[in-house]
Length: 145
Image (spheres, rainbow, N blue to C red):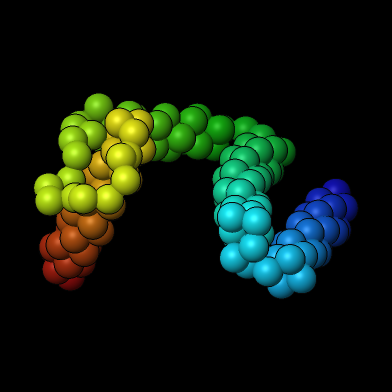
């Protein structure tokens, strides 16, 4: 069974890579600045799609393999996914979405500002979590010795 899953993932990955290469070749033929930078937009949308496919694959394959190998692990996976959702919701709720100071460019929608602030909050949370993890592991290792 594991070999079949490996082959499926391998061929799907190869297909997605070929589509990406085709988009790059199409962009080079069309010109990246022609048609109001349509080729760049297509590649950005493809990158977004690949990110979504990767995240969904990690969750779906992780759940499938966990259910197959160790069904008791599903509870832990659910807790981790739920915790991630809570962290993203907290970052979103804390995002003010205020306009940047001294910005003279084109108008930016409120939803774009909130999304940007949410990503910044998630970056701050990740940085703080990494620092706390290093400190905790240093203390834990010194206590254990």
